[in-house]
Length: 315
Image 1 (cartoon, rainbow, N blue to C red):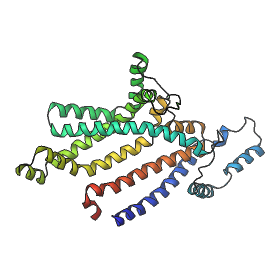
Image 2 (image 1 turned 90 degrees about the vertical axis):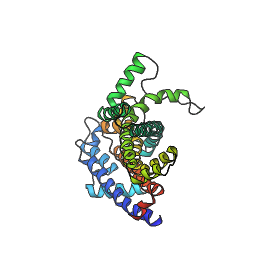
Image 3 (image 1 turned 120 degrees about the vertical axis):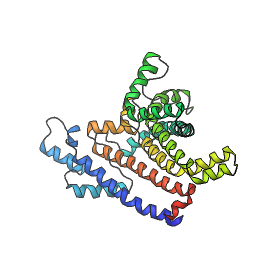
Image 4 (image 1 turned 180 degrees about the vertical axis):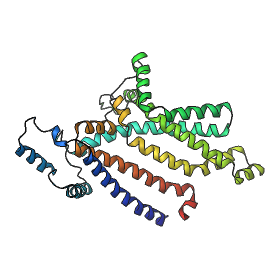
């Protein structure tokens, strides 16, 4: 297990380095001047040069990259051009808000997606299987931001049951019912696509495992159906775990469109504002942290899979 873990660490490091290059390059290749957001309309060339020098934008891009990478490795993501606050100060509250929403969406996706997938696999070619498969196809086909707007129109505007946007005001009593009410609609919208993907993956994997010879042998030996079911789930878990890890990573990264629809102050909403205002330090820092979450989630999934299937360590 130690050598397997070390190999995965060696694979992760160049990926993170490549992510940093892509993150820095794409942001700078985008059209527009980040200084235009903070420059007065009739700024003098001297003032423009002074502000660019203060932010390091007067240097060639390779020098800017290595300076930025050195600062990132030391834990400094820079200072926001718009708010003049450290990027971490803007990013940490957004990460915590997205984490709250992601935990709710992840729990809903894993429970409903796994349950529906197993049910569809054990009712193959019956009406239940067809209904779940059709719902899963619709789930990955319909844009989740459209679903978010439909949920707002129905439950917030028409019925008035749930709030349409924002978060509950801060309360010293901690997490309460008001927080749950504000979280229901965005969590439902975010969980739709992962639920559909997980359900289809679980269905296909469980059906494949049920066809294997060891399952038929267990039936022939008279083992109880409950025990056979547990063996099937255990053998189907490793590939499904990889799919789940990808979906969890995407949810932790937040969704720009869903968080914008609900005005949820998370990383997606922050990223949307950074793009609109061309705030390069905040944009780079947010993208880098989200990419880091995605890579690390896949790394953790790679480490967890051998615990379920020891054969993976020998590959």
